[in-house]
Image (tube, rainbow, N blue to C red; front, side):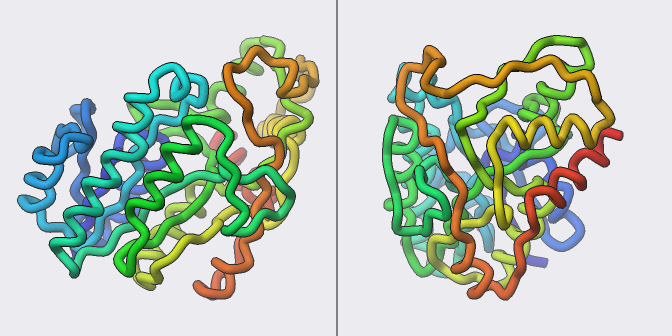
Length: 285
């Protein structure tokens, strides 16, 4: 049985991915702080990272580690670099010395600001995007699949929750929501992304690939559709524009991706966002 190390396993995606892969692989997990992982190591420190990787000797490394608070990255660029870039650099160093290791690196759709952006249409607006893109540049090799994505779903993590969880709870408690009507994206459900990651482990196709739902919609339409599918009818909300918010830095407004390259290379048809919303809403009903 092949050994897989999941770096950053305690988050929204990691908790589900660990369960998804356990029956097919010898899965080991590492985080910097969670007691739920097999190893507790700060992988941004090169010596600690390389020592652990040599000890575990994984066949595959799945890097989920990320600091995703966009304004937080701007306020604390050192933390953003350490989590988003340095961990990836350390993993890449291990791979240069161990040619049999293959890496799945989970990246972001935050590089895009144009409808149906392909992999070459990168725009870096802020420190979050800069540190994530720097990570990609550090690990591009024949030993790495980079998946640019966004995802949603019910959290089974003990330490983190997702957008759907917070919106569901706020609506259930009668709170008014601020929903972005001018920000578009094309996320995947966590379940679909887990399936794609496992496919990537089997195929071992190096390169950079967009993986998202086939169409996409505004965040407002997405969340209203999700809440309606969960059975809510009297939803209190107001439409807001991202430029009206007191954010520290610029953010992209249209992150809907062209997923043609992935579909052709992996022979996999990605789902529509409506179908993904239906699937996730069932987890709440």
